[in-house]
Structures are given as C-alpha cells and as structure tokens.
Length: 98
Image 1 (spheres, helix red, strand yellow):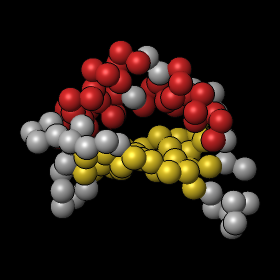
Image 2 (tube, rainbow, N blue to C red; image 1 turned 45 degrees about the vertical axis):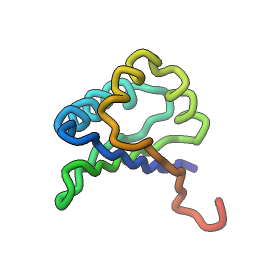
Image 3 (cartoon, rainbow, N blue to C red; image 1 turned 120 degrees about the vertical axis):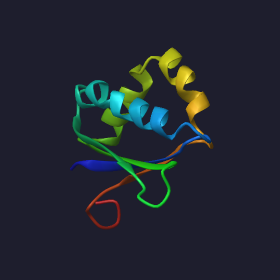
C-alpha cells in the first residue's frame, strides 16, 4: 500500500522565489529515490510564501530512507529560506491506518 507525505513550508520574507526554486530542484533527487512514486510542489495562490509539497511513496520507510540519504549540507544551506520550521504528515487512502 502506498502512502502520501504532505509537507508544509513557509518562506522567509522576500525568499518566496528562492524557496520555490529550491523545492523544485529537489524533484530529480526525490523522484529517483527508491520507492518514490511522485513529487509535486504547490504554491498558495493567495499567499506566495505558503508552499505544499505532495509526495507519494511505496512506504513510510522508503520516504525516511530518502530523507536520511539527502546531503545535510544542502539542507542546511536552504534553512535561511524558511520563515518557520517545515512540517509534514503521512497519509493513506485507506481507513484506520489500513
């Protein structure tokens, strides 16, 4: 059963374009990761600083493996783009954690 990871990002003031390009730049890394089924970056129409990233994975473990293998220095370099700490949750289309 596949899972969906929905991530929320808030850009720091004046960093909306940079954060958008950073999130889009992750596409090739994430989609080439074992177990990734899709990756999409969305920007709020009413609030340009608000981003949602929707990832579909074969499993929670596949997503976590991808995150743990991402170069830390690249993530640290992007921290100045965030206006607040990113957040995310896992979802399934089944009921009761099916």
